[in-house]
Image (cartoon, rainbow, N blue to C red; front, side):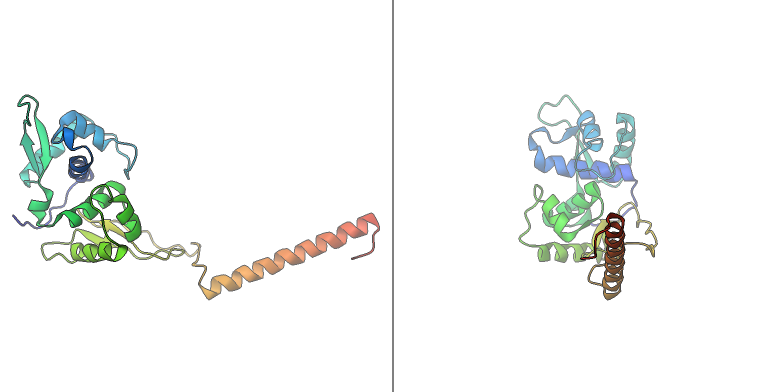
Length: 219
């Protein structure tokens, strides 16, 4: 089942990501009950942004996701409590590795390839950063709709970050002219040297003044 990428809400993104995460990190309790799913959405660690949603909010998101076949209802082994599972790889027609990268971005926000590799470790083990980059490029150029995008590299950073676009493309803040510059930039080095020279001159004058106040000869 392949589908064009629908635009989801931030909560719908979080619900899908939590279901995928808990399937691999706590398989004994998966599929999840509504209560467990809400707790996962409100988790304070390994989440960006941190959310505070009610079970009613999560239930509403689940109803919407069922319409895209991204969520499946199940009663599990007990047959008594309604539980929920995701259908992400099948609906989007992507493998486990690509799904793990996408979910890591959905849970933690924009990250570099190296950060994604480290944070996705519990979901999938990648051999090296280059393999992460290759999967990200595939997700960004997916014919049925991009799932991720590379963000412009910010001043003062050496690596570009990636983000998911399942809730739409992020609003990019204009690069401030006062933003820290990359230390490798020759203009930044020139300014830093000039500032250090000014500091040395100021210290020299202070020392001369102190010697004068104490009636000592200059060294």
